[in-house]
Image (tube, rainbow, N blue to C red; front, top):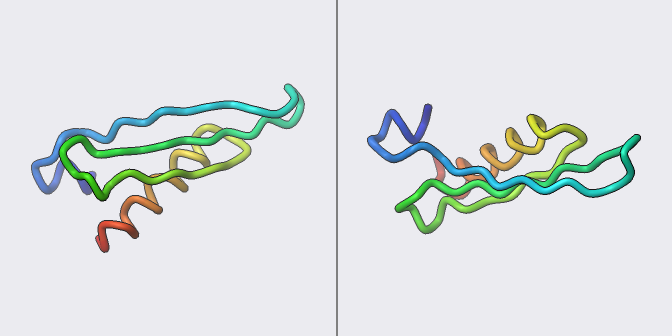
Length: 64
């Protein structure tokens, strides 16, 4: 919503999974194309949690 509200393209998420099947750990990198300072990472026990952490870190870097 933040990116769209300011006329930027949608964020691009890249996710990775590690750990055993019964206790996976997801790491996500997010970047808004065209904003060099927007790249951030997040980690969590679910893909959604990792994406939320990455998005929050990106917003913090952008001082939004």
